[in-house]
Image (spheres, rainbow, N blue to C red):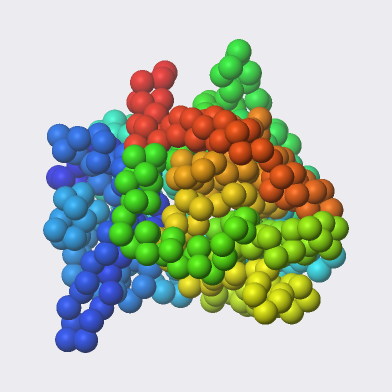
Amino acid sequence: MASEHSAQVLVASNRGPVSYTLREGGSLDAKRGGGGLVSGLSAIGPDTDAVWVCAALGDGDREAARRAGPGHLDPGDTGGQRVRMLDIAPEVFDAAYNGIANSVLWFVHHLLYQTPLEPAFGAEFRDQWAAYQAYNTAFADALAQEAAEGAAVLVQDYHLALVPAMLRERRPDLRIGHFSHTPWAPPDYYRLLPDDVAASVLRGILGGDRAAFLTERWALAFADCAAAVLGAEVVRDGARLSVRFEGRETRLGVHGLGADADFLRQRSRAADVDERLTALRAQIGPGRKSIVRVDRTELSKNIVRGLLAYRRLLETHPEWRERVVHVAFAYPSRQDLAVYRDYTEQVRRVAGEINAEYGTDGWQPVALHVKDDFARSLAAYRLADVALVNPIRDGMNLVAKEVPVVSERGCALVLSREAGAYAELGADALVVNPYDIEATARALHDALSMPDGERAERTKRLAAAATALPPAQWFLAQLRELTTTP
């Protein structure tokens, strides 16, 4: 049953637009976030009755959620947006988020398992799966309560894959869409999941009227999995793609999230970015070129192979020694998971080995930065001669799109063919197989050797493609397709 404060547009995501820190004495400090969903909800205008449902992620969030009760957070904290934050029991949240979403679904879609040893789905997994179901149920219940008759609900990402079907059971009147920000695994790899779990995730998303993805490749992979696992019918009608299953049809769509050019260009010229630019130039040294990467130490980002390719560049092209610096921003991610802590340490180790092997008194080949600093990242975008974006697999990879927008003198892009961004940027990038260290080293050499004029022209075309669907328009396109397409 809908509440008396029923919303016409609803967004559901694990992380919301605001986070809280609990201070001594009990006060709460609110920090607002950004991104496509925030931009999109702002773009629909204040007259649209909208609600964002999210989870409490930490102690400060949980306290804010408790104080709000079943209602909404203080609009002074949220920029005027109506936000309902769910106080899900910490042990349930952890099992759902770390146990299933980040350690199973993420690994499957990014093809990260070392299959001789993993996965091994036993009793602990089943407990975590039950928590994931409970976590999704909490969202479905809240959305059912908040939604007006016939409202549009946009459910985000792999954390909430079961929500569309659960919500459909509770509120068949709603227009429900799901958007996947990750890649989608091909059927043979997807079937590493236990059969019932593989089916449940697909059934969950197919409970919606629409399922959308960052690229056509991921949409087709989802359709292939639905056919292979569920026996669903895949329907192709010209450019239109849909899946029919158990008497319902779910339309599939593609929305390639782009960079926010206006924000990036304005923010990258701020005083703190200028300060960091000066510091980075001093660290690189006069007359030297730079190869820049900006990533979290996420397993799929392939940072270690990128470092190995740079080392191979120095081995095979000694003329670049003392003439180039690899500026590598590897910001720690998911450090509550041991495999991520180990990976972060391996990144540090390999960077240290390269510096020990090739460094001289006046030259450090790798400048590794592990403290997250957005202003410094933007400074690196501005000065980069080469951007290295070589993920094993990535739903999109916005760094590949952001660098050409901010670059001052043009930047050659070395891009993995396994990044979603390849679909839009591949024509003007130097494309690599992310597993091929030798080929990546050659691409780095070609990028460093690229004539200035060619690099500048490529960068212009990359920037145009990268900004074709900025965040606000990306959100509005999803909403429009959900509410206007029969």
